[in-house]
Amino acid sequence: MTGTRGADAPTRGLVLVVEDEAAIADVLRLYLTRDGFQVVVEHTGPAGLEAVRRLRPAAIVLDVGLPGMDGTEVCRRLRSDGDWTPILFCTARDDEIDRILGLEMGADDYITKPFSPREVVARVRVALRHAGPATVGDTLTIGQVSLDRSSRRVSVNGESVDLTATEFDLLEYLMAHPSRVFSREQLLSEVWGYAAMVGTRTVDVHVAQVRAKLGDASPIRTVRGVGYAAEAT
Image (cartoon, rainbow, N blue to C red; front, top):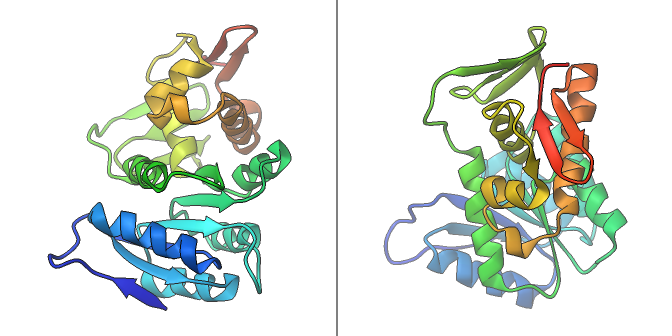
């Protein structure tokens, strides 16, 4: 395990980077540290999993192709344990199936190599914004689905449903504007905050994940040729 701390105490929290390529890990550590994060680096899947449980980082930058245990398995185990720390997958794979698999495993975001380290930092900051405390302490309800902004909890008929931070923010945004139809580009801009960096397929995958978790109670409706809206079923 290695860590880097600037001259002043970090103000943005701890980011765990799990990356087996030393050069990439060093660049990510440098840029994240410059942005005010404390950074810890691990190089294998098992070491990364242990570090998450021990350090409780604010966010995880997780390579997919790790020795010992790949990143998707690390993510699966964390989510199975009820750990919803924001995860940004980094991988050399550029196949859409791999991206969808990562998101289905519970990742909050996905970026392919080669990438700009500044983009990674920007995405980490967005993921942390998603996971941060809400500023509006009210409850949104559509049909059987209730969303508590203050506790960031979602329930169906009183039964709690686990969503990733990004899934929560997507559902919240749609439920906060009932019956209003948003294009995929609008949702990328409003929920993700960096529409130019990712494709609209990201929205479709997250919508599919939310629907799968909420079941028939899901209020998200597809408006063919336009986008999505939240309406009572």
